[in-house]
Length: 294
Image (cartoon, rainbow, N blue to C red):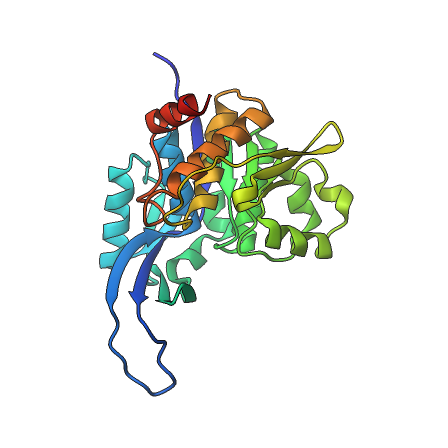
């Protein structure tokens, strides 16, 4: 039997609270909304689900609260095939993102809650989990100290590291040196360039550009990998889907270009359904999609 690659994700686990309304209330005003829904979210959880659906053995390291949201999110991750043995309940509430959608625009308030407990000490307690992985994915929705510790452990043990730098912040040189790939979108790339010397990131950048595809550096030159043309329903979670696809492609031994092409296919399919995790495709769906385009 073929050994499944092991991908470890250190990151956020949120419950997204989405309200759709024709008008955003002013201060002190009460209005009726049109629709409300709760969706599993958080970039860490999203990327873990994306990789698990593609057939990888995925371990998620993170924290939830000892509340209903925490229980529901852990149960959901288990159903998606994510190993949650290293998702721990803490005394803080589960992280939430309150999202108000009106006329195609949205306003978001994130309460990090339990995500703040993913500290350097917490990550250090998971050293063996990270050390025995094939690949590590981290983002920036949990404390930077914990991210840096996870990357440090991975570097010491020869584990490939993907950093999805969102939400964007200034990155320490030590962190950049210890990662293999950085996957910003165009906005995040621009801010990274403003805060860092070009040569620190050169060769590590894989920039997601939506309908324009993905750019990376190959043999000293920028290479554009075109996006797949598809009827888009919802782009929520497309970036997380790409990162999951990229990780799975790399652990399967694909070249960087091939892994990015695979990630593009995963991201494209994810936009054909509403929601972040609900739209993420399986390995079989991705294979059929790629074959249909050849």
